[in-house]
Length: 117
Image (cartoon, rainbow, N blue to C red; front, side, top):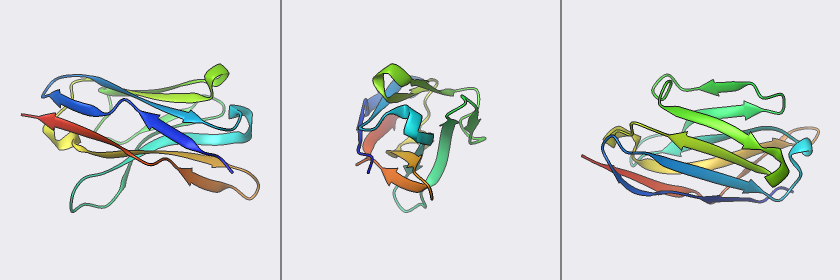
């Protein structure tokens, strides 16, 4: 079982920046992938970015060049640095972690990001 606690959401103006954090209760050595999804009102949850245990990253096309995912293994934490935010980035952002064999996906409680125009 992996528990995830997110922080860092809030209200920001168009073009602003925020950094989301996701702290895991388990050692990062037991986690194969960590990442972020988001869900806007009336829309399906979509993948934003993820990072593997080897450090490989992947981003949705809509956030490439603006968002950066990173990890701090000593703190069991993954970060999502979000720059040049747009109103369409407004959503609840959920952290996830894949761990175990067979792999199970764990979710955080979500953190609201609101970008005003």
